Length: 442
Image 1 (cartoon, rainbow, N blue to C red):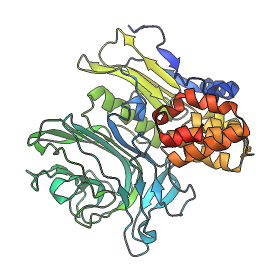
Image 2: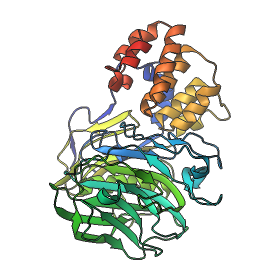
Image 3: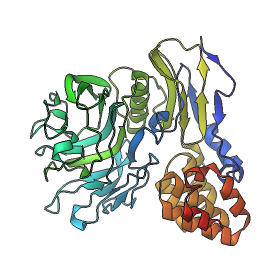
Image 4: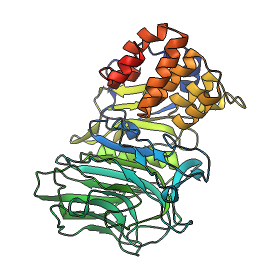
């Protein structure tokens, strides 16, 4: 039996946000297409699948948000981090820039890395990724096109302090290894588990510890455990530079394939949380899971899947937020192996038909988490105060600071009431003490 406390299902409290108040009708359209899947669940946050927040979700790159272009075949100069930590992936060298693919996996976009111009593409990540004493968890959604030598999905740190998920040499084996202080006791290998030309979800979980130390680690493909190792270095507490997507610190490790999503946590998430993230990714990209598939509405409601659940008393997740709108929390009386997952059908967007440059359409895109489409819609919409204000909100959600500040100034110049609104709007919570934000709303 599931016993719910009050406010189990609630709207996320966007205090005084005109994102909500100006277009309640469209918000209701969105939730008219929402499916709640009975089961049970655990702890509500706003990261992937409703798991984690900016405090432990270090990196979240997804190709349906934050790419510098949304036109197939055009180069990507930047891919904005959705975790809230502004760990944006960039590439300033033209012949190293990967390409955008609009219809790659289950109709969703991906980023293509290859060497069709004679040199391999990759993206740089900022310095950071410094403390994994609470463990490490990572997920990559990819379609490897062809095998290269030591193809890297991600690679963090210099050779001496390296964390990498990659192909083992030229084989089809998936390999995870951590160097600490210039040495490694060896890596963990999933034999034959990279299948070229196939969409797949790779996952890594590693226990924490106080370095120098080793800990247990596990490797997954499409939710099935494919390897484990008791002797993986705990990464040392050091700021890592030379961080890459599709490249490594040895100056090689370049990949030939598509990446749709990359997620990295500085904690070892629990089993219930892993199942929920795997279900979110599976539904979104149409990738079948090997067991523990708890969402039965993939065909109709695959957008923004999130949820709560319980494996046992030690593996619970009971608080989840989807798209910053719907929050489920504080469920009591959950039994083992009970879950509650929820997704939406993108109905608010589809209801607009052929309409292209409309504020309400942009709002529907924001509510469904498609910030690329929201930006494109707002760019061609009539320039009103509410359009500029919504562009600022998109900037906040995609960690594009200049987009926030410039559009707030424009909104306030057309309608001074947005000055007071912005001061109390939780969309801009992380900017309250920022000098540029204060200057924008003065």
